[in-house]
Length: 264
Length: 239
Ligand SMILES: Nc1ncnc2c1ncn2[C@@H]1O[C@H](COP(=O)(O)OP(=O)(O)OP(=O)(O)O)[C@@H](O)[C@H]1O
Ligand SMILES: [Mg+2]
Image (tube, rainbow over the protein chains, first blue to last red):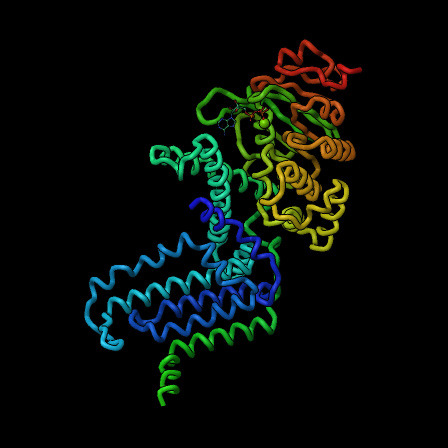
């Protein structure tokens, strides 16, 4: 658990690697990701078959970026179940049979559950990819260049750093705990309260000092310092192709088309 | 020039941590700020940087430290924090060193030149592309000093710059500090280092100045040092 959380931090390490995806303009990536998420969310709650082809985009992008999809699932293994849990109750509420697979009836609830889960996973995959291929400061710079309020981008940046600090503190504190509680698995319930309190206080103190240290070195809510990759023709093509792809899948039922091809 | 005039400060509603403090530090002076744990050394630096604010007047080059002038003041001052973990926030040492120059509108090329020059001066080229969360405590301290030097501030404030350093790096830092033409304020419990780097020493106890004078004089005053939980610098004992 602690290890899983601490793996959430240090995304920077992935973001400074090099690949065609890493070398793209941050705004282009940010916009494509946002459009992707919006389109994924816009699918009907029973439209599982229509949604499935949307998997192709992230899979392709992961390929191109050299980041294994497995890394995403591994790093997000704590968040994934939460996202998946969202639709868990649908099968109990919506029992109407919608589909027959052989002689097993599949209810609408099951389909909407699967659709919701897939939506969650796809959005996570896409967001993870963005953060794993773009330094966070560059994402903030892109937001600023789109006239996002400065306070909001700063807040976002600090939240990101805060998660990093908190995961570091968590690692240090669990080590300290286990050194004085040998043979214990996990942290005893009786210590949870003080542990959590300490964790928050310590992370807050550190985050505050980190922010002070940013201010002392001239941070003024602009991101001149962030790595900037200019918007080039290739970025425009990338965005156009991505959006075309999304729209195609959204408005033509591709799996049905492919299905028909095989049936004939 | 750095001026403190009747400055007092307390955290929350506690007892005063800084008590009616007054001193002036001229351009190019190197001043050692010494005193027991909890004497108020770090707090003095935070007051000067406007990270906390108290009563009285603090000014840098005639500009008063207050909300409106923070930007101007902070550009003049480079601060090495006591805890280096909280100093570095960019992914790599290189990006951290570039942060301040780029914010102050130095061109990317010039900033890179500065970074390389500082890394070489500190013999740290090998750290350039390391991740900040994957370097040792001492390396982090060295990197933190490097980020501040890359800022090329008019005055350097260092809070315990040599704690956690091995003897080689300690010597590198001492020599680097000696080579700096800027105004320097250095706190440390390493009195030998203070002796090697500072001409003047201000001794603080419970937020007040107990002694202010030449390093030569104060660091040899065994009775004064011992009364303030310190010992003579080793180099003086063995002489
Ligand atoms: N954030 C804080 N909140 C409340 N009190 C504080 C805080 N930081 C420091 N103090 C108190 O202020 C006093 C002076 O602290 P300061 O950090 O300035 O000491 P110092 O001289 O730098 O000591 P050291 O040599 O241990 O670094 C101490 O008594 C300390 O307990
Ligand atoms: Mg201190």
